[in-house]
Image 1 (cartoon, rainbow, N blue to C red):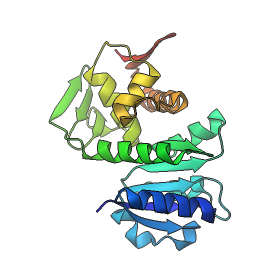
Image 2: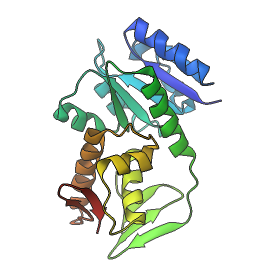
Image 3: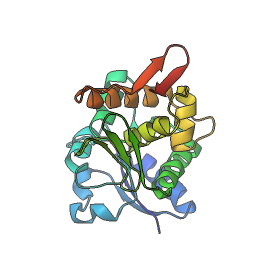
Image 4: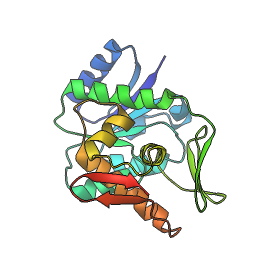
Length: 220
């Protein structure tokens, strides 16, 4: 059974999420603060929902603490909508964010999309000159023999664009292809992920993702 960890200091929101997701057949662990989370059991979770603004250790701090420990998608629940906050959150390892107040149907759809993505089959490798290589089974992008430190969402965006080299995709098309949400595309999420991808690849003097102004992005 799929296991999801939800951490939110607002009891009403916690109960709403827990009761709704249980109807979808998920096994839910609900905590009002990060102190309640059993660090030794973090690896059992298939997805983590993490509130940002909590007393004590906030969601950003906790994400940084656990990102190297867990490999599952981390989704922020946040009232912070400034681009710099979103950029920071995705930059420290989150895969997506959901803005409060949110519709429970959207939350359920986002979760289902991320979980579907985790189970997609991968095959072999995909290489590009001069020294870029996708390990499609391990879901790792290499520059030469060095793995690029991408989050899962960043990796899947790169893979999608690379598989369709030369084609231009809008932010909405990228979101739908990567996360599988018809009509729920979040432009800020894709823009922020692209910024992070570029920053990480520019360290290797590689710039494969280009902007086609007014349309979207493509892999060169």
